Image (cartoon, rainbow, N blue to C red; front, side):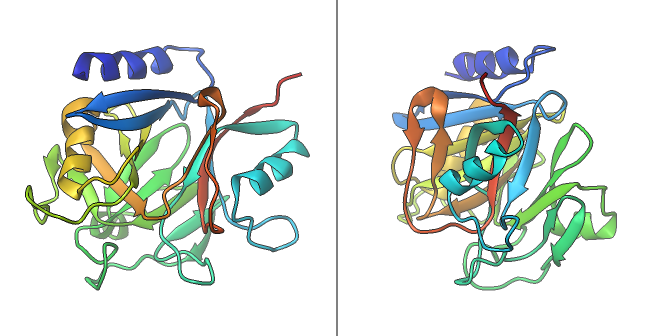
Length: 245
């Protein structure tokens, strides 16, 4: 399975391949969809508010907004945790503007299960950075979202993950390759943190990976004929490509 997943990433990262690419894979008997993006070739953006200042909240509304630019989504998923009013929990940067500050303290829930981290999208590269390391030396992020916990840190699973945990949810997250590519994944059915982290560590081979959310995890992958619906979301992350003519 590592070989198949690696083949997916290699196919995407070939020079000149300027699109998001999603594929179904199986690991340890569990199904996942993996979407790999080379930020040097394909634009990755975070979306929260539309031009009218209203929360977008859905893939359909993001698509409608992009249509005015002659663009479309290659794929998208929910892009981090949010409060009931759909404002981001923790750091949020959109188009170079910091709209919410980073939170480095421990707290309740998954977000506060330190270490947590930041997905930073810069000039043609993606980074997943532990939050305190981010605050010590903030990189130049055009888009950024904070979430938690980290799934993989320096090639190792988060130290608080339990092999025999009974906490299972449909989960989504993102890892980064050593070359700065971004690899997103969402589980087909409820999984534990340990199981989900093993996907990024053992199959996708990303030395750093970040949990984005669970329970509300949703995916838009037109190449797979998938467009999940549900309650309105907060931040949404997506690969932006030219619309077909």
